[in-house]
Image (tube, rainbow, N blue to C red; front, side):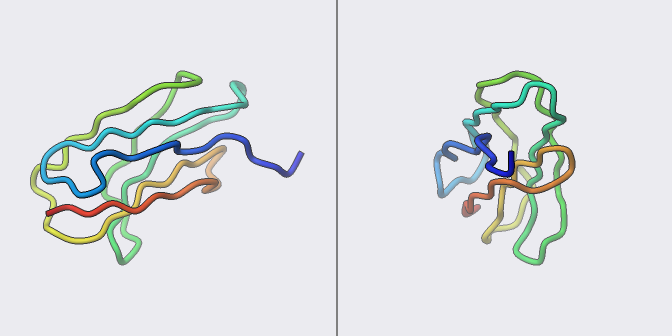
Length: 88
């Protein structure tokens, strides 16, 4: 099956200064999932392991410089969904 049904559902707020909430759905419970927060240059800043099928994760962004960042969902070390957010 080449169709990935797992995804990042929503990031909120999109423009954030302290904490971001990431809602996600995982469809293959046997897979290894994690979220990666990276900067506009692609540097990984934070890795968040995921263990539940459908949930919300909150991540502290204190200390991150203002700019554009990305949150990517990885399934077995392959990126399958990415959303953009802005730190102000």
